[in-house]
Image (cartoon, rainbow, N blue to C red; front, side, top):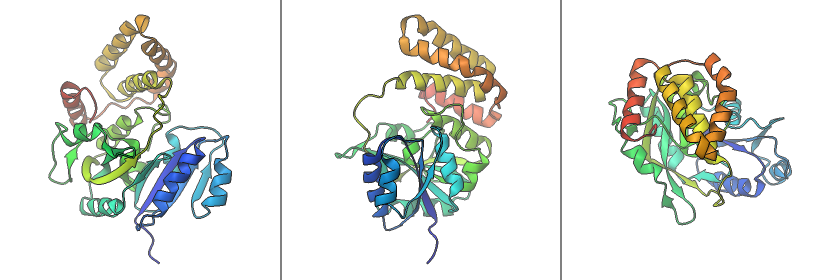
Length: 291
């Protein structure tokens, strides 16, 4: 039997019921991808559910919660040329992974393919879809779709070699807006990042708000600036956050947590090459986000 061209990596923690729904959807796909679940040190019954109900799924159990870095461990564990990411509340539409494989086969510079996302049982298009589709970076002759410098982690398919070449997800960010830094690093290594709406992911997130999420997003945006953007821009964004901090608890927390991590960010600092920085500036000026 031929090995599949695409595998799926799922990072999970303490959401065994949602994970089981996701796995049933993925195992029903005709593509039958290899699946690796990376368990971020769950304390619920995740390990029991996986062993009992999904013996065909490979499991990596991490001794501590490593956030988005769990996805990198999953990619390393696979040997398929392409890897799709799902969260424990998302899955891929039937036939769409075959479409992704064909696009990646046909475009050797394509390092990451960003899919369209349909949210919830009503399959509402995620607002991010239009931001990606109408990215001001436009098309490239050797890439499908539209060039972007951002994506949704649970709606992305990567070329495994490109992902590892870029270093995968950065350990400093943990979770929250970690996609932008990976997109920067792929582009800096010469890989294309493109939005291809014909590839579709389903996302059924928990409707309850995630406590602290705004602060984490702002913290990681600032750390990303210090890691990859010019120093004047990083300083300006730090000043902006400091200006908001006295009257905004999320900004205050984001600034405090970013400053704790700043020495590590400076040690890992690697400014973007000029052509990628120009693209990032275009996105800053037109959308305010790296899409």
